[in-house]
Length: 200
Image (cartoon, rainbow, N blue to C red; front, side, top):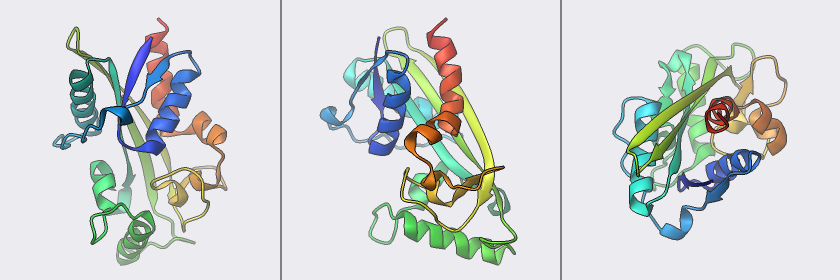
């Protein structure tokens, strides 16, 4: 089975393709199609994942799998949430996660939290949408992982990994190896549901 990974994010493509390869599914690279990602106008992770999956599938005539994921910080009213990617855009319009980390720290301090003792609760969400353009059918799978926001640690992973500490752990996602992260992440939890569906 061949599935197009519907993303322009190299980190997401690497993680998702590794997970799918583990069940012998061949992943088609989206980068050769030079597609500009559609505007994410949904109000939930599931709605945005569907928008992306449907767009890539119809543009390439392939079954497509899209991921919409983000970091939700409870004291910040679950922000950045579905706006996680846009939240990291700096004044020049480029994704700048160290800059986003500082912005989050400032907002948490204003809300009475810090990155050492009074840690803010947060959770990662990953919603995977599998869309078949031939049958116009879509199905979503969602994983959630709870943790805390800490000072940035580690050079691994991507996005907000360096500031996320899973409950019960002493290493951030940025300090975990790819293998360790793939076994416990929000994406892995969503993938387990997808895997069961594909292997039925």
